[in-house]
Structure formats: structure tokens, C-alpha cells
Amino acid sequence: MSAKVDLAPLRVAVLASGNGSNLQALIDRLHGGGDVEIVRVAGDKPGAKAFERAAAAGIPTAVFPLDDYADRAARDAAMARQLRADGVDLVVLAGYMAILSPRFVAEFDGFIVNVHPSLLPKYPGLNAIERAVEAGEQETGVTVHHVDDGVDTGSIIAQEPLAIMPGETLEELTDRVHAVEHRLLPAVVGRIALSRHEA
Ligand code: GRF
Image (cartoon, rainbow, N blue to C red; front, side):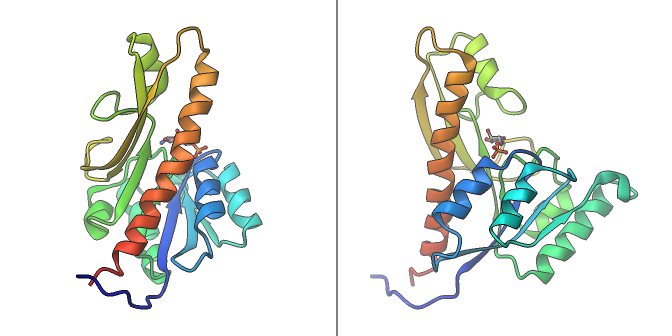
């Protein structure tokens, strides 16, 4: 038996380093809809397109370039302080290309999710789509998973396979993988927000 109660929106921070198309999908599908509020977009790369997308949606941004800090732990401590000040419930990695320090992961333990373009545990790390093609795989896919101290090793929340079509270019396949990401990641974040209604 579950009871529906009125809850404040899930306060989400999105970490991104690049284009931010997954951030855009989260903005378009969830932001401001009542269940989810993206309260901060943060990243490590000044000038990333993701920040433009955030600004266009009126979402506050913060950039934490590694060069401004003594080391990665100090950078991540500053980022954690910002996200705590923002009252963040869930951290979403959407093309965040830096590895989070163990202390940051421990601080938001169980409340950090990542989207990755492969059927994990296959092809963790960089160039996952390309490596699946080069290995002669007939399918690849998208995984959304919890973040732990490893690279793309956390427990899997959702996964969607995608056939690799004979003769399609890497660019065509990449576009199809991204289209799945843009659906699966908002679906998972929306589900996490709604799961709080279950008493
Ligand atoms: C996505 O393929 C995501 O799975 C991976 O990095 C890429 C980011 O793309 N972690 P974008 O910046 O969201 O467009």
C-alpha cells in the first residue's frame, strides 16, 4: 500500500563538461514540472556548451576548474559545499568527464547517478560506442547507474539495448545512442523523484 503525499520537488544538480545534450533533455522533460527542479549546473570546463543551456533555462551555474585548486580533492570539496548550500538531493552526471574524489562520492552516497553509452559492465570509460563497434558487437545500448569510486562500476538502475545496424556509420549510431540516453536518463530521474511519494 502506498500513499501519495505532496512533496517539494527533488532538487537536482547536473554535472556536465561538454555539449550538455543530456542536460537539455532533463531541462525539457523534467525541469519545473513539479517533481524535479534543477537547482545547479556545475562542471569543470569553463565555456562548456552545457553552461549556455543552463543559462538559457535560468538555472544557476558554477565552474570548478582543476587549475584553481590544490588538487582534485580540494576542487571536489568546494563543489560539494556549493551543492550542499543549494540543498541538492540528487547529483546527476551527464557527460561529466572528471572522476569524482572518494570523499565527494561518500558525501552524496547513493544519490549520484551517471549515464553511460554502453551496456555496462561492457565498455566502461571513454569512446564506449566506438569500442563496441570495433569489437564487432551486434548491439550496444545505454546504462544509467549509481556512482561509486570506480569508473562506470556502480550498481545498474536501468539499461536499454540498441541493435548496431550493418553499414551504419559511427555518427549515425552515436545519434541513435544519444536519443536513447535523452529518454532513459530523464525517465530514471523522474522515477527517483516519484519514488519519494511511496510511503
Ligand atoms: C553521453 O554520451 C554520456 O553518456 C557520456 O557523455 C556523453 C555526454 O553527452 N557520459 P552530452 O554532453 O550530454 O551531449
